Image 1 (cartoon, rainbow, N blue to C red):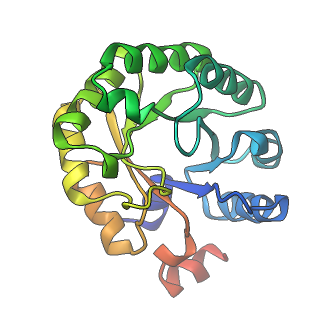
Image 2: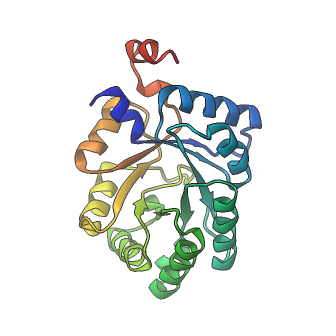
Length: 225
């Protein structure tokens, strides 16, 4: 894949709790210089990131209910609304994983719909945390997201101790989505080969923590990053 097209598929995540404003600033500089598709930040960092990426090709995404999804739905909706007001062009929300596992699909769907409504017109990516789910639970999660009007389902936060994205989980999400939703693979994607394999499967976006590590020396030199 051409470098520029590849970079547009990346959601560069700066989400560690110890990430400072200098970390975010450097990420915005890299995204602007390289043409990264999206910078994904904590909701408290959205305004700062959006101001520094204004006029660039990079969108800013905010995480909501991150990383465990345990806040009540009304707070997730409020967080999404505030993030969009601060300049977020996309929202990545974490579902209530325990509710999905308990079989409360209606509650999960209602919560996603509340965030979708609050974030409008920003598209919402629904993080299922697939490492914690069975295949049947993943498929039900996709159905909840589809019925609630989300734009994407996403594998992982990258914070679950059980792991991040896997090819098996991505295939299940792609199959369950059936073209109704796009799929974002995220968590543990550390090589160009792995990244391009997810794209070849049909994933539209990739969540990564190291953009430069996915580029060759020649590509970095050509982009001057």
